[in-house]
Image (cartoon, rainbow, N blue to C red; front, top):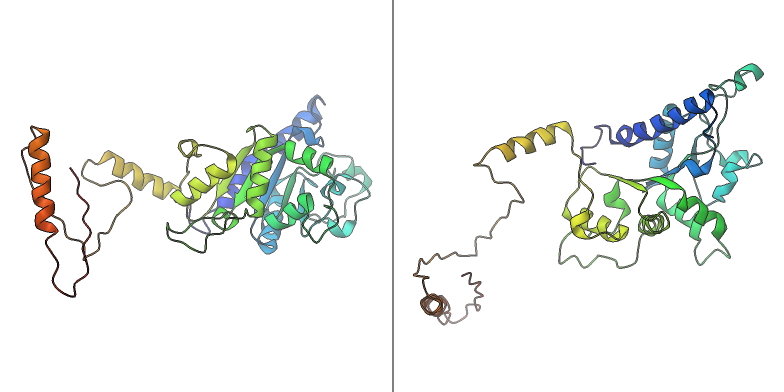
Length: 302
């Protein structure tokens, strides 16, 4: 999703997820064939670059989702404890005031469901599952972590340009080779779910470097990179450009003023005449530079 800050990207990915969860709750109340508490129905992992952003998104999600289905991961912790009744209440994120009566608790509105949406910084969730050198063992056991990742149905990378190693330019020397936590989580989920997970990446700026990096992390060819969804205004402008024959579509390339261009029409009916003309042009352009002048480089296009 590519849209400016403040345009509603958070709602764009939260609404479809929470709508699916509400439908499961309604179906469970009708025939009971679906258990909305079952992790096997799919879990949403929402990754953000900071804990503050995660708390903000968790607050929005809690308003949209059935009660209890949204949990904030504020720090590395045993994630499977969120599914247990004896979980430390200090680790849970309370979204509703606990003022319901016993009758209300028996209704679908008052019932508290098991977690289906986990929101947290990529670092907190990654350390919860994989740990680091400072920890004797990950807070979440490997079998439980594998089960959680295998049941991930939605993977959301909010502010994806900050979550992944995106090379700003071809000469960017600050580009780090080690994987970021979000990249490790995304690769593990894509592998364990065999590509069935739905990946949503949102950012105010989405360019080719982000698309290439996301494809690499997910194990996709660059040609299989997910489609970029844009805001309505951007989509309208893009459609107008496509429909117009005289508007250039693509990246604008500025040629430095120091670069000179020469166009030489030649007879290209035979290979010999073409190469002879090219040699003549190269010899003329590559005449010995004046003393003190740097040597010139030539790109010859036939």
